[in-house]
Image (spheres, rainbow, N blue to C red):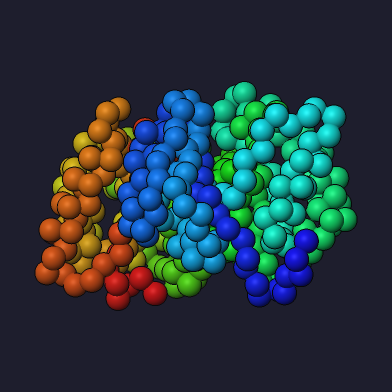
Length: 368
């Protein structure tokens, strides 16, 4: 294998690979196609329904160094993971998968500093999760033996290997910090009993996914004020109160006793669409079940009028024309905030989302 200095990226990519929730292959494929066109890649998309991933295959090889910086997994709404891929190894022998994978890695002419084995999020593929855990260390040793792995070396990319089935491996790479925070894009978050509902995990994931560390530190400080519209039974309210924020929970329904026991929550029985705070707050969060355009109009109005500095919200999408619904909401928000100044609008289909996406909206002056 050619000598590789810590800062040398001699890898050649063949395309892009994105993981998603099963049933959303069409949406992530369309996003992959648009993303590739936007960075000047010519090729085609493959996406099998129910496979929970899609690939873009470039007509011409592309330098990994030119592609990697643009492949931040947050770029695509429906992608849990976004990676340049450089090899596909098929017909893996059951008793020796390491040798052909190591050979393909060595032939790529690139050393790697971290190894992650992943599967798509399907029942069939997840049966291999135990194999992936057992196989990681032996494969790492084989890669070290042939000079393709140097654990912890600065400046070297991560090696991600996707196993959609026992006999196929997609070899992908990512620069540090560009891949998803969690393997397969599935967060390992713990549900606490006092959190009232599992929806609290959705807000926790949104906070880590949609906000930068700087934004989290600045906007989730103890003592700041927040409003939760459509709060009952209180999963999102609890998540904010647990972080030390004082929350006004707006809902005609009852709040869980464990949420009220935090003594950080005021429960207001009112309609979330008509209630307004007496003074501006740092956060407004909203997980109401309603038409996506109505939610988009609501959050845009709260930001435009200065009622809150930032908001996290859910858009419940139709079964068909999901991308069109997202773009309609984006256009609505953009139009409402045209006179308010520059803003940050980020969307992501989180692991804890189903037929919905989660958004973050803030004026640029608030997006620290």
